[in-house]
Amino acid sequence: MTYEFAKYPDGTLGVFSNIGKKENGDEYIHITFERPTKDGFDTYVIELPSYEIILEDGNYSDEEKKTFLEIVKNGSSFFFKYARMGGLKIA
Image (cartoon, rainbow, N blue to C red; front, side, top):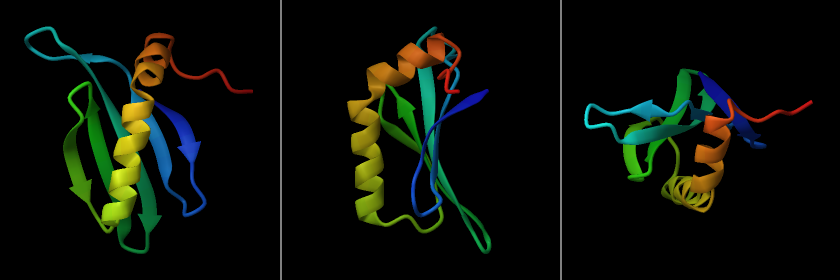
């Protein structure tokens, strides 16, 4: 399951996943930034808590990718908190 947390003017949608568990028991969350294009999607996925880039596909600029990483770093506790709660409750 994924939960939307932002929609940007260029059409990029920011979502975060449920908490997953690796084989060693470590928890993780995937934060995905995706925007539609004429040929599909630009996609950028960052894993928390490692900040590892899991998927990079499309044409996001280096500046956009830097901004996404900052958003994830600044919001890491937010993402874990709301993933545990089952997402954001927005009316």
